[in-house]
Length: 85
Image (cartoon, rainbow, N blue to C red; front, side, top):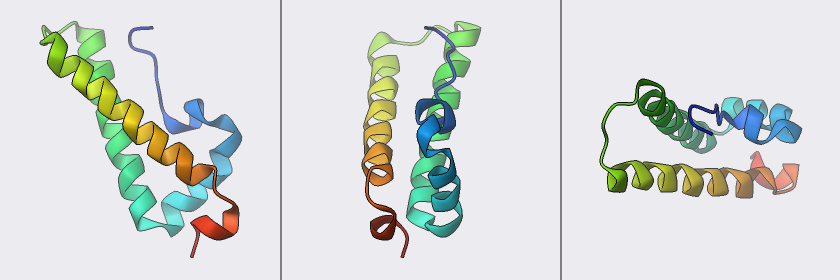
């Protein structure tokens, strides 16, 4: 759906607390989450304003968002002792 919010807390509601904990305790995770959020915000902005964008560029951004989401899910799926040092 166009303009749908893909914020991490909506994508992974069962990991809400862990997302917050990792953002505070893990600078690498925090940077990854920020990149994901910025990319999602840019995609939603383009969808909402219907700014003409090349399909290839737009699809590349969406692919990057999926790849970041997969990385984040991989981290969230690890046992708690393996994610926070």
